[in-house]
Every structure is written in C-alpha cells, then in structure tokens.
Image (cartoon, rainbow, N blue to C red; front, side):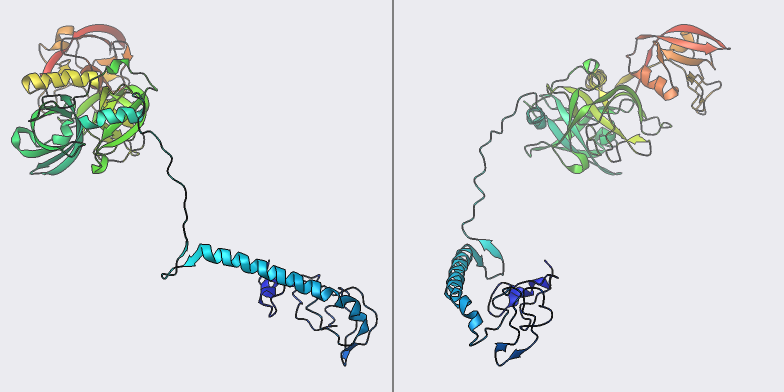
Length: 447
C-alpha cells in the first residue's frame, strides 16, 4: 500500500478509508464532486440548502462517512434504520480493538531505557544432551589426545618462537620440530611447555636433527600421559586424521581432515642450507598453521602417525611461516621413531647417504652426480664411500631408486633419507646414452 493510500489512517473519526476506482483516497472529498461521479456518487455538482438537486442516484455511497447527511431529505429515510446497526457494529469493533490493545499493552512494556521487551517471555529450556562421544569419533579422539599435547614457547638471544609438541614417554620426553627450538640447544635459550590443564614446565633440549626437522625435549615430571605411536606405512589415502596443536598461539586447537597423499618429497627450509630437512612426507588437508609445528597428526585410534612440520603456500614454497590452504605435511611416524630413538640414545641422529654430490643446476630427467668438485671442496664421488664402492662415476644420471622414478636431486635425497643406514638400494643409472643398474649399501652421517 502506498503512503498516499495510508492517509485514511489519519481520519478524524477513526473510520476506515474508502478508495476511488483509481486508488486515490477520496474519503474527504465533498459530496457531489466530479471526482466521485460515475463511481457510486450522485452526479449532481451542487447542494442547495441541504437538498440534493439531482434526483437520480447511481448507487449507494461507497463510504457512509464521506457523504454529508441531507437533513430533511425523505429519500434517506430508508437508510436511517441502518444507523443504529452501524453504530452498534462500530461500538463492538471499538470494544474489540480496545480489548486487543489492552492485551498487547499488558504484554509489551516500554522500559525506562526505551527498549521494548516481552514480560515473562520464555524460549524454553535447553534440551538435555549427553556430552560423551564414541571413542573413535573426532571428539572422542581429541579428548584422549589433548592432555598429551603441549604448547612450546622458546626465548633465545635471536628472538622468540612458538610451536607444539607431544609426550612420547611418561618420564617427561616430548617430541617437536627442530625449527621450533632452533637456537635453544646447549642451554642457549629458555624453553617452556604448557599443558592443556594449565600446568607449565621448563624443558631441556635432549638433541635435535636438522636433517629430519625433529627435536626431543625433557621435563622433570613423571606419569605423564604419553601418546601411542602408530604405523605410518599402514595409512592409506583417504584415512581420517586429526591435527592438534597451537596454531597462531591458540593452544589446544583441533582440526581434522584426511590423508591426501603419501610419499610427498618435501624440502623444508632453504635448499642451499646445511640445515635443510628432506622429508618423505604425509600430505593432509587438516588445517595446519604456524604454531602447529611439532604437534601430532593422529588417526581415529588416537595413535600418532606423523609430526606436523610444513605447509605449502600459494606461492609454492614450503615452510612453517604461512597460512593454511589445505596442503600440510607431516613427518611419517616410522621415520620419527627411528630418529627419536637415536637422539634419546646418543643425543644425535644419523641419516643415510650414498656418498656422492648432486648437481643442483641440472634440470633434465633424473638427478645427476656432479661433474666437478663443489665450492666447499667436496668431491663428486666420496672416495671409499657407498657410491664409489658400487661403481658410480661423476656425471652419472640416476633415473630410479628401487624402481621409483627420480624427479630431481631433492627427490632423490628424500627417497634416500626415508631409508636407514645400512639399507641396500637399487639405482638405475644412465651413462653415455645407456642404462645400467647398481646396488648401493647406504652409509651414515650425523645431522
């Protein structure tokens, strides 16, 4: 309804408006106006001494209040008997409206602050619901795992860092990433842990492995809730997983997703750095952000199947200083188990090598052994090393490792480091346009 049509609400007598055929409000139009002619109004245009001069009436007036009563006109006597009925109806409507208004007025009260509220209102009681969840549901797993996950804060002379970790031994051993505690080794920094119940503790760095981006911490505590370690070789693409940690400093954050892929070659950090980590990673779409580093990736049995370590960015880099886009990477727990055991036993970790330098500038098929000595004086083939003993030569292009195609030097390093020192691997090599196969027993170095 238009604003013009609503003017009927302002009638002095409170009556309902009547509308002309064109939609105009004519309740206040004078009797016999030309606007009304042909629309239920007398066609006369004048009123003489209260008498209508035209005796022909087209139809009864549409609005009884719009036409002035013609005093002494016998033609209206037949309608006079309707007046008491109309008045009675009007009175009844008024009483009804008054009763309704009184009821609404009782329910709605204007407060001193001008707000309109409903007295005695109720939206009903909250339904009773149990908070228990099945053991293998995401809430069930989270409830069991959260007490074993810690937030880590590190302060060193170079600045501060935050990350996550988890208890692997009830006597106070905690696993995290090397890049979380980097700079705090040998007592050069302060490392504090916070548990989900608010308990805090100071930690010492037992040892680290930059090559696998892992570190082991120890706190003075007993009977801690250690997490069980699973078998990363048994996970399959599509398995549901849960990541728990402290992304962006938000401790006790739980995210979930699936295993997106396995055996992803990931290089975390600068490839030119001696501290680069080469990981044969588990890929997941569970949300991982800075601060999740070092936290557990668990299956629906609550077993750790990986340590969250890196995320991909839109720019294509890999690291721990960017936002989540659904592409995160975790160190497989089978690799973590081997490395952590070495750190606990000796304070250091070992990783396997073939005893050859690779040509980082080569962009052809496979990975090529360097032709000449590196800038730091390292020979292409280490004399007496595994590659030398197997018969490899400078310039050889390694095409496959144990039948798996090699796509670049980084991928070859990742594939080798997913093995253990002393393992024998089969390399397919191209030399002088022909292919040949070599058996290499992997050596070991610390890092």
